[in-house]
Image: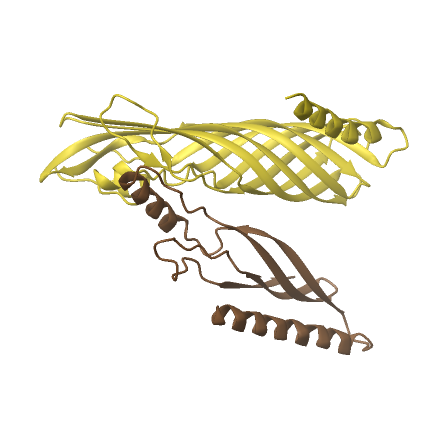
Length: 126
Length: 250
């Protein structure tokens, strides 16, 4: 939980800095064009625990008569990116973030199966 | 029952009536397409493969060879797919789509391997197959290029139903047969390029990616003395070629 909170703080801080930089540069007469983008969406199995969950569910199914299986989560995702374009040159940098739902077993309620994940991407188009 | 039909009819009316008006900013198209799906069904994991044949990674780990045994590689499945898509184009730049696709494995999934049967190396003949259908619903944007080309990016979700069968036979004698049926809601992303050969007809090529898996499903095949368990994996790419007909000229 603390790790997740820390990640939120870091990403929020990055976002604020980026917005500040864009606002700062909005009056400047730069060569080229700067822009800031925010996007949201849905992702599935964000930290690829599917094989482990499948194995867990399979073991449970083969040993118990009635099993409520762990489902692979769909998760809300959001991202922020900055772009600089100068004629045919385009440079874009951004990051995507998601917090998968925590799944806890009743017998082991203190352990969370999912971890927080932060993805980053870098694009260079010319 | 009737209220479901009513909802479907209302949805159709909402989509079709505005689009049929002459000055409407909506256009409709219907597209037929066919293509192939590499690695259909993913690694086709099942419990018996891990428990009896020592493969925790399904078809990937089942391949083994040994001197003195005439084995043959068991490849991942290659699927063929065909389907129809209804497209609604809004204000030239936005689209909503609903489709129906059928898919079936046409190549791979057959071969011979070796497994350790209580200390004795034994030849095992394997057979996998996968088929099903899906109904994707996506929304997206259209980027027109000149007068005769359009590139479309769309994403959404699909309802997918599948059937996965496997069979393992050896001289032991041993025959494990499994059949798993189930459905899931995979996420879908689709990129399509269309070239208009006239004002109403276009040929298209598209790349779609599905991502979604069912929960673990119990084997419905009876009489082989074993009960297997497996998920159905709908994740994978689809490469398609198609033809579109637009109800109004572009």
